[in-house]
Amino acid sequence: SKFDNDLKHAIENDEFILHYQPQINLHSNAIIGMEALVRWQHPVKGLLSPYNFIARAEETRLIIPLGLFIFKKALEQAKRWQDENFFNGIIAINISNVQIEEEDFIEQIEAIRQKIEVSALSIELEVTESSFMNNPMQSSKTLQKLENLGYKISIDDFGTGYSSLSYLKQLPLHKLKIDRSFIRDLPRDRDDQAISKAIIALGKTLELEVLAEGVETEEQKAFLIDNGCDSMQGFLFAKPMSAEALESFLHQN
Ligand code: G
Ligand code: G
Ligand code: NA
Ligand code: MN
Image (cartoon, rainbow, N blue to C red; front, top):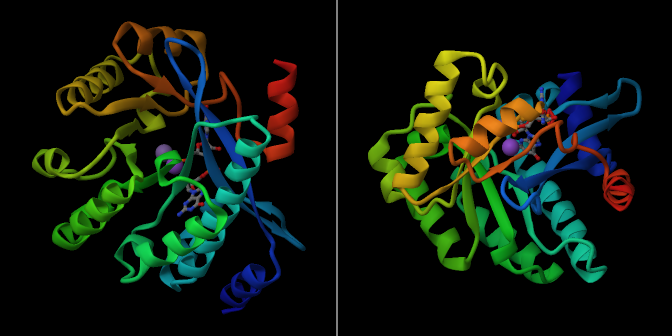
């Protein structure tokens, strides 16, 4: 289709840019991570959200070259921030199931990482629950190899998928990210209170960090602190923005 062709050319024409959103420790308020979030600077349609193209990129497998491009861009940015001593924490990168299931995924990202010279210890890969539920044997091997190389693995949108608790225990995970649909109506909604508390408790039991996504209010933040959540991300602290915008935002604050 025309869209697929546009997408393909957009990769060649360098039309994708990354925005970054800080992840904050709830106790120290320190920035512990930066999540890279892709946007398509479309020549006609303007700035497109990943909701407009990631699913199609997955269907056409264009997510393979696009994902490598995103990985490279994010590492180059992390490297610049480290060299400038601006930010030395974690760079978090979203990884599609299609990428995880690709045979030479690890070799490909490792080649990029070694060339840019960023330690795997400062890279977190955000995967979704379906990444390891589709093909548990193969994906657990992949995740184990990544862990052996020093990468951190977090589960994005946690609570919206179908994780079996026994897999969660076996997999080399570092973090659960509570999906923002469970945070939105906190602290008022009783069901969301119960769900977010249960995820925090599960994280504690499995010795995983828990990060709450989509935190927009002080009341939500207070609820999360009171209930033992470790970290947060959301408009309350900062929206996703370009590296330049983020740098001036953080200098001003
Ligand atoms: O950044 P927000 O702007 O709208 O992101 C929307 C969705 O797109 C999120 O679920 C996010 O995980 C996904 N997403 C954002 N950036 C990337 C990316 O670089 N790769 C993949 N696979 N998904 C992404
Ligand atoms: O699904 P994933 O969590 O990876 O993507 C993060 C998405 O959530 C991005 O689209 C980002 O722009 C959006 N986002 C980040 N912080 C907030 C927030 O506080 N509120 C809302 N409504 N969306 C947010
Ligand atoms: Na994410
Ligand atoms: Mn998410």
